[in-house]
Image (cartoon, one colour):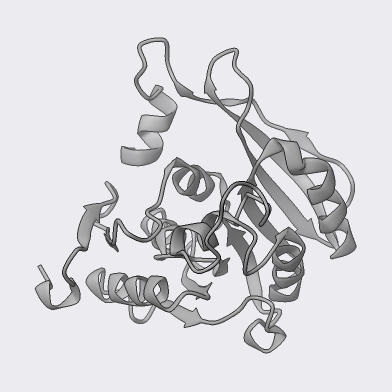
Length: 244
């Protein structure tokens, strides 16, 4: 183990694929099922050039590499501590030639060029005014639209993609009307959606979306993803996403 990469209060989590691991700090924002679902939903390949927005500790880029869905992946993260975790996870997995992190603001157009085949993002879901929020708290920045909103994310994705490139993201179903409008404002057309339900028969609490830059208007709604079975355990499909 590369012990020099780990700082006090941090931990290394196994990702269950190809021996990949990630460094996490519980005081910051640790990854959840939404990141795993998004990495599974995204389409790519070993020659694909990928960009991940709002990368946090780098979980989605590392999962894309673990699933052979990207040849080279670049992540952009505004919080220095999270970007540092990502940088050290790159070294931990010997990905220095295949992954990089930029500590910066996705609203900075100079950071993003239209050279990518796919863009991914697990963006902040909650409006800045929802609940009690400390604007300087790392977890609040990850969850709330403090540093950016979905309009900023859509603009950044469009800037980064080649024409015909694909944007994959996860969000909340209740915001889909605004999201589709913002996508279209930025030459992105929603082409594929999948609703995520905590249990069978319950309401969806997440939605996975694929949009295409300069794409047509036809859309596919995929069968729903159910997270927990009647026994309270992960369904087989979800277990396969983690360990398959």
